[in-house]
View 1: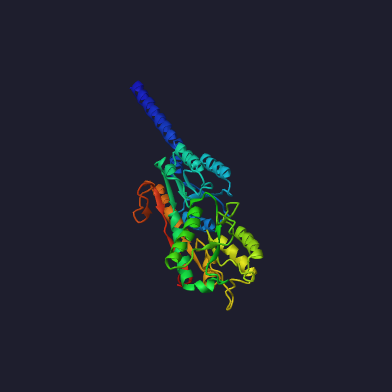
View 2: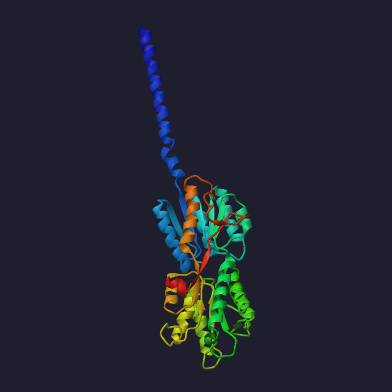
Length: 372
């Protein structure tokens, strides 16, 4: 009997030790680790914090991510593609499991492809935004998407606004009365799809409206400039670049000499406002009664630009919806956060038929819309 009881006691103790050992393994097995692995950690990469439109997108994105309680880190590429790619690789090493990328280099698909490959190799999704990447990049990875605009649309809208405005105000705009409108165009960046299309269609579409009405096409102010635009050589679409260019122009072109630039077209509002600063220093576009206003057009509908339109200092812009951009990106972020597929819940958006690209629409803004 004693031997039997001893055997029973030994068996109970053995089972207890096995149970304790199993419980310890479960504790170490990472209920916390599993939770951490499932938590979203977003790396958001901006091509340049100094870009006024990008700043607006960043502020909107920060607010949405914080509201959703999602961990995120922002990175400033400062216009340097090598820096941005290093940032992407570092973020992945530090545990980022979703990349949101405003790529620096847009003149070739190589940089975007490298970023996409880094995400693919890490097994994490990547969302490009604002600065267009090639379809081939997006198509190379099932967990890749792009959120942006129809790059040509802003140029078409600018051209339509310019053409219609000139038909209604031709004699007032034609300061030297030679029957032709002289213009300058400020281009943001060579090789950037948005800049290329805005530069092309703003003039082409305005010319089409003018010539159909029997008016001459627009004339670039400098006949020796075969490109028919002035570009920000830093690629930053900067206000200062346009101010510097305009100051140089106004030193040689004026109403007094009969060769005044009579129209300013800019690829973004920053450059438009830079041109206005130079014009105001020369006594134009003050918004005061009796002041001559040179028509100036931009893109983005920044608050400061819309205010200038309301004040009569700027003529028009095309709204690139920063909040709409951020909200659309967040739809995809929330998809990943809830375990859905990257492109789920996009039926209300404009999506390309042949690629995972979502288009945020533009809108025209003139004095009537600005006042509304």
